[in-house]
Image 1: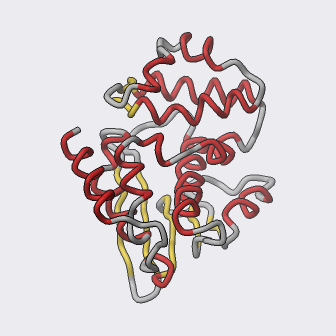
Image 2 (image 1 turned 180 degrees about the vertical axis):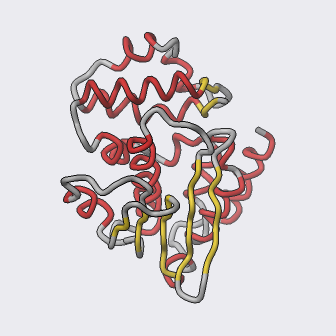
Length: 219
């Protein structure tokens, strides 16, 4: 199993944000920093997971996973990220993410569902993770960040559900997500109101979105 190498650019920048030189840590796990700039490169999943855990330990930040979103950019997902940026609505953006999630990680599943009121995005990596809290926090924080990039900073999910236990201090969670939170949930779920998921996004470009989606398909 492997992950899309340029996606690790967020972790690189996050380490720098803590005043930590990322290069020795990356090389310790056998990851050449140049691969972060190679749109065709992939990194073995086990190396990425070990790197992530070591980075969190070095930072000493209990909210390491959540704060990674500050350094995440859709462009770090290559053509898939650019297709996201050009999507006409959050619905079409998440449909693309669901369709091509394995570009990010081969067994990553992003399942979509809805009812009369809400749109549900359920995430499952289908892998034993070295630190489930870090990954779950990082995934949900990134979805929030990416949604605000295209829908505006005033966007808030309707609810966010975590499989993890509620932390002793959940203040930063509420500060970041700005919505009701559920812990000890059956599934990792990002919930959006239907009126938000179908709102036409300014700056969308169907032609560019489809062009980048074609690049993803070829990849």
